Length: 92
Image 1 (cartoon, one colour):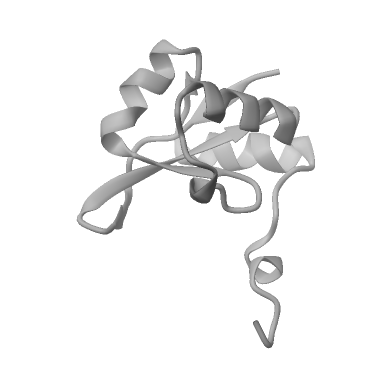
Image 2 (cartoon, rainbow, N blue to C red):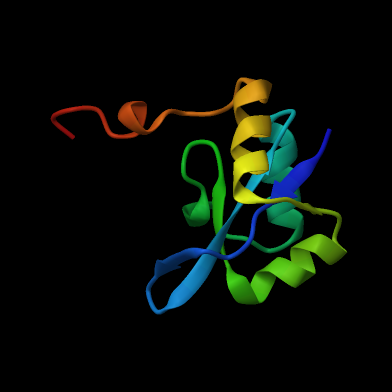
């Protein structure tokens, strides 16, 4: 079981953001995020959005730094990936 974090590449709200995922379970992901002080509101169905200034701390706490492609590949392989088309169903 591993928690993964990709590089901060995603701009939003004047910051760059990374994704934090688990390649094993959402329970592991939520527990890690809670221990790092990441608020539940940062969770987006299969990952947490984390600001670039938090990434080094997450690695210190045990998150494995990986490239974005590797993060997605491993998330898909885990069966936890929520596809973009399934994120926001029509009418919502």
